[in-house]
Length: 300
Length: 260
Image (cartoon, rainbow over the protein chains, first blue to last red):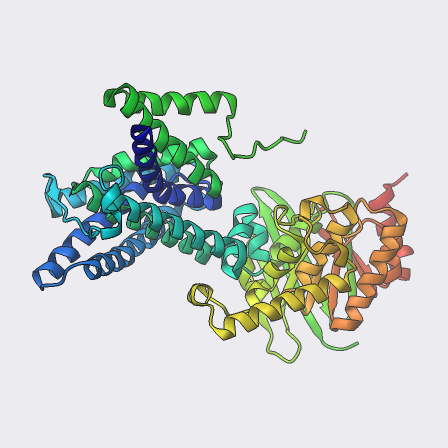
């Protein structure tokens, strides 16, 4: 039973990280129907930024939560700037182009950013310091659920709540929902849709950076390629839950996290991806729009 | 009649070789209700799309003269800029934000008249909160004005058809326009709903000192409420005048009924 619980919590942690990234995919898709393949790279850049800042701060003699908080803030700002810039350079000029063009542009951006970090940093795995301190109250449970895992789950939950609040109740959230439903009409209602799209990219990038910093600190190493893998997984989670749907992205991520965790624990870690993608195929066969996705009935 | 608020000169829009709108002149004076009529495919909606920024006109000038302000040429401006300058519109096929409530739809219309930004949204200072309360109050008042208070928290897509039409008008009014463009507001309405709409439009004109330009096929409504009528056919203006003049104009009769 304890083993089950350990796998459950492990899946929850994994799912939380996927959720932080998947939200960026799903929000951008919801508003401009584009799969932003460069999104995984934002997550990776967030982790690298945090590594650099954390190293500097540690050298300067700081430690504990302050390092985590500061490197997180810098990573968020940096990743947000990257997200905004990517949108302006790679997608905005293609707003009126056929759907395939921005998709190719996104893949190009992804490859560019990977290689940019590869050249600017290194191709080796870099050790990442454990930024989350060991909480003393977690000590009895440390063997099944570590402090950094707790941190991941809590931060993710808080981010979700803030995001839900922003989207449901604020003026900006209403403008985002309006732009997602009907971009032209949103403009006619006086909404600056370009600004809303930029904001969406910034929010998505922010969440991805948070995920990147937390997971890097948990696993303890990073390289230029982590964004690609995590990005593909999070994208899968977003599709699983119903792309375009925010609760769907969270649900899809958790389902994916648990599937992987239980498959690894009860079958074999070699089969982790097999189970994850079998699940994806099955869900898409029976619910093509994803778990929470809405199937649009075409009116004839 | 008072000054002009909209002055369109020689507006032209071509799609490839097709002249959808061909040198059309049109003007709306302050407080006036002007109707734009014509057979299907005459270019009426294209004309609307050109002056609201959805299309960039191929030629001609679109000038707006906000009351008490200098005239301004708005060709090729983005729709949200034009809306912010005080021109709002509704659509022939209803384009509400279906998954949002009636109140939220109107609040979205208030967007360009409020100042709150993302920083305010996160930190929720007193000015943001006050502005939010004012937005809700204003939106509720508008819903009351168009008679939709019973549907305040209903999702827009679940509203009855006539109510959706009125909600579109309320959302357009939320942008504080001086000129309201209505694209077939009575389409699909029954006679009773059309009469209610007639009253609503007349009331809005008085209460908000609005000028209104509408496209409409319901001739009874058009003849009832319009001060002046412009008729287009095949993209060209073929007549303009008061309802009585239009009724007796042979070119108009020919366009609608054909020659024998």
